[in-house]
Length: 624
Image (cartoon, rainbow, N blue to C red; front, side, top):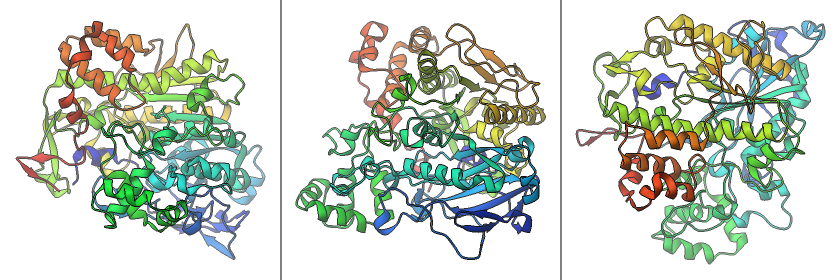
């Protein structure tokens, strides 16, 4: 099913430029490669392997260096995405391949001679895509504007996801397994392998292997933070930008245990994933019988069973009937690939190697997700041009606007607290002063079908990507996104954001941007300004703020908020804390509002939280 919100948010699209150019021939450690002319006077090299295909016996193994090739590699086609279920527009369709460890490179259109005559190689920016670590791919991002305007090299990479990317079944390791293989962090190891490839080869493309910035959004931001917290990645990158990252890590204990009877767990269980595959193969009638089947196998038989499982079976087993409270697949704090104390150890250990870092979130992160929930927004079948454009359903109204704004403010606020304020505060306290933060506020969106998108989604999750990459010329974007008079100021804001990002990539300090003409972005200060607000001139523009989003600040606001009843305040805090990583502890929850929330029945709240957000029921008829 196609929803308007999803359509307008899939805004980074690839160009069809595909003409090879002899000036783009580059000599890598694997062999010669030729790229293509791309938009905005750039070269692009697509689908370069940076590791061997993790298939067969290499599934759930640390990535091995890619093999060399003979002749000239025509790098003019993107590779397949890593294996996944397409859950947005075709819920049961599987796409991609296990053979997916490829990267793409964009550079200004420089000849070899021009590269050789450069005074200094260009900064490199490695982008890690988002998608909850279960979906997404590199090819939907077009960084050519950023590359051309700011004179940087951008590399987009792919990595194993889901049960192929982060998985710790006890049968997969033995005394011969390496510490990397024991970690279960295969997706993280893929990103490290990509950095190693860049270190070895990027100079041939005009890039500086000693000036690499890693950046990514959402799950990509989580994976960027994982590199920041990985001793194995030290020295492979030199600056970090975390856009709307997820700051929690997986539980090793939960991943290697059966789910409890109430099915509440912070991490997917590898043992239950195994059981689901047993049932799908009709070796047992239910999960209880499947457990007996699994426990009746030797470890060698269990390992063989998992390696013979198809990627479809593994992916389906992970996504179907996930545990209550579980978040997206996240890294395991194994003590080797990722610090044992997780991300927090990287923030607080003053002896751990650190580099300049930017954290940021969007003002209305949660609205994108909540807009799809029929408990909050009414949806009906699309009509007219929207139906003709292939959009099945449209939002018709926000059911309770004040309530909707309130729950989204606190949901987004707690996200900012966990993903920006806590990390920044911890780093500065540990002596790491090269710490910067932002909040993206742009929300000058169009009114469609009588619904103001500025209120429906606002400065939503992922919206800042459009501004970072500057991909504004797509028809859908221009037609459905911008409110009256907002296009030109939005383009200028995009240029300003790119200027800050590039200056950070060049120097480690975003300062006043590349041209030194923007408001000063100062580092996080314990006593003064803390983060930069990114907004257009139609609103209050770009400016620093000293307003910190602490737990006390958010709880105090929630307790006094007249938009919510006392029960709704408790339900809001429960919903934020039910999932992992962003809310408050049981102790804080039970003491909120003098303990008023501790005796409320939250069954209905859990039903709302778990409402299927990729399928909407209209007039008692399910649209599929």
